[in-house]
Image 1: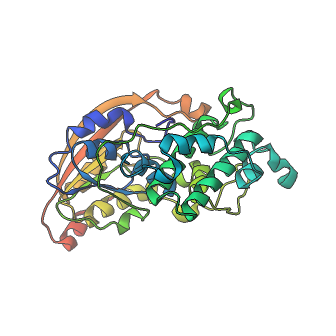
Image 2: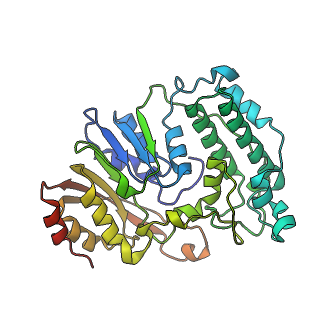
Image 3: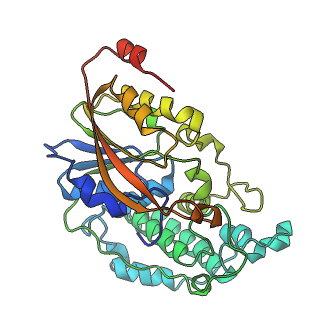
Length: 353
């Protein structure tokens, strides 16, 4: 991807891939898919893929990286590259992103939000509107729309005036934020991948016992729905009522229990206990809310657990406070093979700190 995403496993996919095993025609179920880095490597290893995330922007970005050229020919527009060129030629309009997330906001609320320059914000509005009109006119398919929206998200991020997330904008314009918004065609898959997507709460996911479930839940207090709110608005193409200096869209209905220290352990163990899959992979780090010793103790009541230390990676640093903390964190992968134990007895054995 063209930008950092909190918790991204892009730097760890090779190590995680070593533990995927053979697909045997089953699904790799990525419950917290993010931008889809791990799902992509699973697809390359022959797995069918099911993507899930609270955020539509996440499943859009993840699905786009799995789409093939045969699924996205853009035949009605003369091809993918031609479609991208047409979108790059769209003149800016004064739409929602322009009104709320550029200096144009000062006229309405007396506050200058500097996420994008006025011209780039207006071009985001124009491109998103054109993608939607093409889809409504049946000039592009749903998969082609997904691909173009993901390309727009990447383009917007390249000119966003942010430190790394959309939790707030920077006070001064960065050099990249003054550049021109430009969509870039990506290299698509040669072979079609079987992909299903959903935007369910993790507790609502239903899986087959023979599927392989991968869990990469939030580790810390950072709520993704608030940190990536503008990407969600661009994806949905809606016009929510936004508030505060950052212009946040309503997000608290998507607040994750995994982001609260007092709830994280219980929520994570309950989810693993609920899932009917026999084999589960769980990514976690020593920076997480849940102590790894407590986690292992509780997971032992559910099944056989093996912990693998994957690597020490550079810590995500969205602000000065984060930069002042340790420079790296240890990333782990837990392999969980669930025992065929009655659910009631499993719950009785869970020991929450």
